[in-house]
Image 1: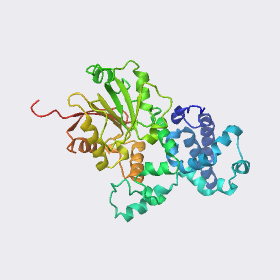
Image 2: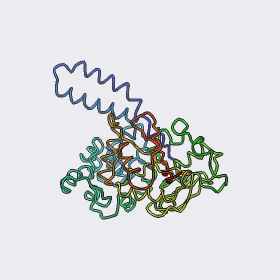
Image 3: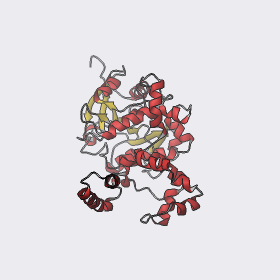
Length: 379
């Protein structure tokens, strides 16, 4: 049986034990760095870079490490190093033999650059892609810098990742992404018991929440743990290829294979919830997703809850803006500002209105966008 992943590692400093020693080393080097000597300067760069890496969490480091990390996973490098004793230095030659890997590849400059600077194919191809499109923003999920970089004609990034065997890793990613963030249903963010429970249909079979494209169920399972006596039933939806990998969530949660671009089979739920779904798609696809949900909602009863990054007009956090570029290169999609959300939700002719942006008070985390159907005129 596979051991459960400790996803909290995503929010812990990578090497806190090294921090005090590195600070001392930097202070010592600074004391002799009076004439701007080249050797000392290089040593300071190495020490400060090591300090930064030690303080950063895996979540902060990983965007620049993907190429090296994926290579290490594929060849079994990380498992071997843990088995050998992760707390001790390990020589490239000693690792290459058991792995059946060329030592030169393992120690290559390109891999070292990937590890330090995140030299990946999609970001490099992004400039060429923009030039080829005459500097116009692409809104076609099947025509992105990722497609140009990897020479694929698959419909979107997710299909490509599944085609190369990375579907399960993609599904697990959301578990790590959520670590250290306020969950949408926490009372400090959204008053679930005041907004969803009071006028809930009394039938035990009435759908309380439909988690649309909810992956492996991280969010809906946390909701169940926080509100074990909730009314109605909880439903987790995603593509059948994802549903088959769902394990370990509360057995009362109903699993349902569903493509959100098709008709929503669950009608009149109290809430339809999406977490980090809309930012994966350009506006035209987003309007289709919203339209399918609006068709299923019951006026005056149903809510649409969208948990997403909302980029503020000033003081945007780097993680949000970096994510914006990532969405563009991989999916021709975007992280949206508040104004953009209004345009997409209220300006698409779907009879949806935004009730409120529930904010965590920090620019580096998501907002919960609460939406309802516009009441029919005359009521």
